[in-house]
Image (cartoon, rainbow, N blue to C red; front, side, top):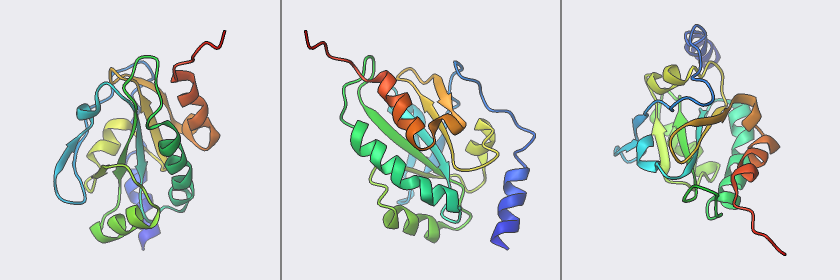
Length: 168
């Protein structure tokens, strides 16, 4: 049943197109696990990975350790033009408890977890399959998205933005 619901949810997004690299990232405003509203725009000035996922999504759960590693590695790094790196998780779960449990079980240590229970944010970004990532710069402009941000690709994209110090 979950698989059918997931297919129907994601296939309903199939007609949408993603905002393109170089375009302004659409605002996201969601409730966090405590019921408080979080907004993507509150992270302006930082490099942000918008991570669309769900607790029932096997590939998402297998990608979570990579996102956790990237967050630990880059959160305190010095970037050329940004004040750090953050992850803004967007869950497509239909039920609240599995989402909260997955945050804890997968040790998703960042504080920006939003519940997109009606799919508004996913539709705005054309997230037709998950996991789906969107990397935005300090000005809120999309700089990479999709498969380019899976696995080692996420680290490669973030390395491009890290301030390089001269050794000579």
